[in-house]
Amino acid sequence: MHIPLDPALPFAQAARLWLESRTMPAGIRARYVSPRTLRDLNQYVRALNRKFATTPLDRIHIGLLREYQEERSERCCASKINQELRTLLRIMKRAQAWTPQLDECYEPLLEQQADTPRAMAPAEQNRFLEVAASRLEWQFVYHYSLLALGTTASNCEMRSLRLGDVNLFARVLQIRAEHAKNCYRVRTIPLHDEAHWAAARLVERAQSLGAGEPEHYLMPFRPKLGIWDLLRPMSDSGVRRSWDQVRKAAGVPWLRIHDLRHTAITRLAEAGVPIPVILSMAGHISQRMQQHYTAVSDEAKRQAVEAALRGGNYTIASGRLVERSAGAK
Image 1 (cartoon, helix red, strand yellow):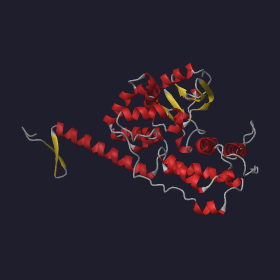
Image 2 (tube, one colour):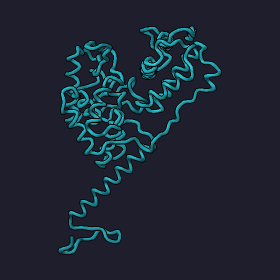
Image 3 (cartoon, rainbow, N blue to C red):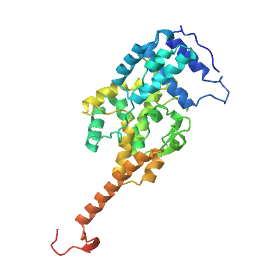
Image 4 (cartoon, helix red, strand yellow):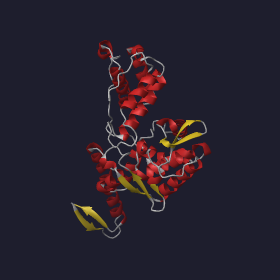
């Protein structure tokens, strides 16, 4: 339902009304947008509120938009910033506050995609986990990272977990349709010993905050110091401060929380795990990334075969497997 917005409204108020127009009354199954999209929109609005909350829509000019791009670029990628400003644009257009002059002057940031996301090397991963485990105030980062590295779950999937999605008895983690990026990411992930231990610690933490029902979030939202909303998931900023401290102390200042998934999949590929098995655990991976992980997996298999041959009684000569001569190395 397209509720008109007053262009003189402060952004925070206009955004709240706009978000309300994207939802249906409670109890109605029909919807305008998926729950995941609605969560993303709420996240974009929270980010925009830090800059524009009290600014009337019709007072937002190109200078403010470029300031926002510059300020957010210190923390976020171009894609995320563009998504946030596209949300602002939609709200301003609803209020007829997006002028021809803005349309002419506004330029989204160029989204440059690297060949592959960056993954921690094994030594970097070990160091990062050692540092995270070294202080009590970093324990949440340690448990979060262990679970992400042990399951390939993305940041969004991790934050969307509810107590009912973690079955410690069956040792599995459930990524449900309403929390998955797409239908291919709906999956059940087995928990090995480290991931199971980390999941148990996060369940204990949630219970200490008052969580006890299956619908309560494993990592709930904290609206105020000492206050927890068990029916809202932790935001991106919920772990930011500790995360920044740990990655700097561990010597990996470039590491983003999203890189844990790529690191986890890379470890599987380095172990020679076939791509179909990786896909069953990690869910959908782009064709480009499948090719990357296939190359990593094939190289790991090649090295394993060479190591086995070097340590055994056979070698390869002229393409054939031949027995080593006595005394040959």
